[in-house]
Image (cartoon, helix red, strand yellow):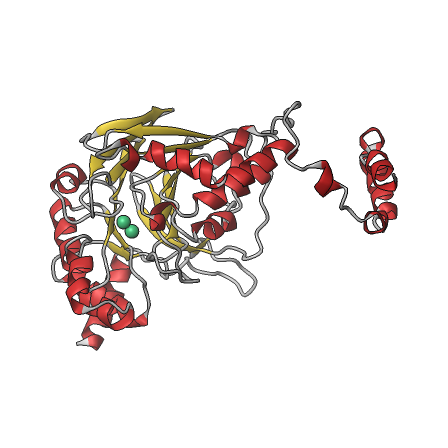
Length: 413
Ligand SMILES: [Zn+2]
Ligand SMILES: [Zn+2]
């Protein structure tokens, strides 16, 4: 059975133009392949009528080095970039794409589970220190009460990070430390929550552990990407998913996998899988009903021990084009074709400068450090760096901004 499945899988991979297919004929020993099997971030300009989707998190709430929690970056040919969820651990993958932070300022949250928003911490502070010039924009659903909505979550997120925010605001520009929240009604069906520059994003209610979660559809240049967030099979996704280009939908671990690998008791596992998430079989049924140009399953730990069981479950009910998502998988969508590749990225990624400059620090903010704490500075320790800093000051022409004399005078008192 396993051999048959593998044969079928390989045949299927060829049929869909799977990423491991040939890159064209190499015509000499020193020649290059005409096509790439891999996506090298920052090396390909998108065509005007093209969408690129990058999986920056495809896993579960329990951390795993090879798979962060849910996050998809969608880039459109007009130059816009949108993050759909930003689950725990996903910022390391986003950063590895080496995109200037000025372009990573729009986040759409499907719901407020931490495996879908945990790394907003990293984007908020990391982007602030690495060049984002403006406030972070966050879209997300309301809840049954104000305390269950996105606005409440973001307001209290800023309270949670208050020390971080106040101390950074004094030293560097305060503007990128702000969050502008756009909360919308979670009950809206096909509701436009964003429309600018040729991109429309709509929301749909999703059903998952409580009122509030939503799915999103992004439309650009006559193409569409539908992102489920977390949900059980629901009528809105099926109704509004018919014929979309790329359908991203969660497919949860099969219940016996949750028992075997995730330490869940059987009475919880079959509900986690199949009552508040979507099982592989249900995922397949959804896809064979809406018939997208390409389906993407995510929200499971994808490894030798699990992927065949999930794949076989999906194939019970769906035989169309399919990706079993892992982190850094990339899809390019045009009217003619959809390709799937893996991104090849560096582990030691620095932030890349963009064209925007951050506003300067704001004068007049109270110093969050007291005289008492500042007078604890050890002068000899500071003076040890003087020669190095003298050279630095000259190189950058900072003579008029030398902060040392005033500090040393205080410490020498
Ligand atoms: Zn969830
Ligand atoms: Zn989740």
